[in-house]
Image (cartoon, rainbow, N blue to C red; front, side):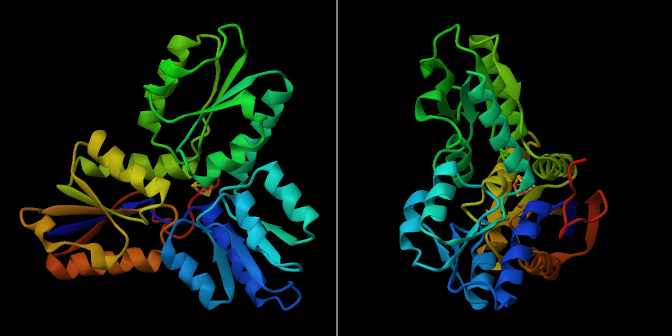
Length: 310
Ligand code: SF4
């Protein structure tokens, strides 16, 4: 069995910057203790466990606004790459906490866009994943009655927006570009005057395109990523729905099932932009030991760094 290492894969620059900031804070004695991350720094438990070993605690399981209630007086708080709403920033400031912001510049750009469009009188249709922190933060830039979340083509029919309302459509950064295209088309059919702002980031697009291209030459693709990682789950979807090949997501080497590889001659391996490289390398080593040689495909490997938007 040949193991095809799909590139680019793994950490994007937004994730690298967030983890670099958190590790720098952990080493700096001038940073007020304790240090908390509001939500998982990236959706990967291995990355969260690494930070815990450095003394950084992760708060999770509630909205960012409610999590702030768990932070004690005088502590430091890190905002994750997913971004936070203005209400969260304001509450953290009022509580006198020391703030560190690891919001990805690509997410910040969507916040600015929503603010501008709301000021200009638009209603925002936000295309995103329910109960994910990025929509929570971005949609918080608009008053509740001026923003609506849609996640499926079927949601478009239910939208109760007057036909003459100016509409701006903004997408989450980590969606499947193919699923999103269908949703955007449905919105344009119903609201031909809607302005469309497709904000899927370059790192997400590159990983999806590489995975779909590689799917043409392999029998199966393994996606290494946490179950809560939106971009990892989208990689499985695009390989299956667009690439036409089976794909399995594994959190780490322990999830690999030998039964998947019985009639497989070539297996592709990719990883979500929140997956630490050592976790992916362990999966590749397991596959190589299971049966075979290794090769690379796509662009030069950027497993650790991703590429900035120009
Ligand atoms: S996936 Fe895209 S938006 Fe999210 S942190 Fe990475 S580069 Fe930024």
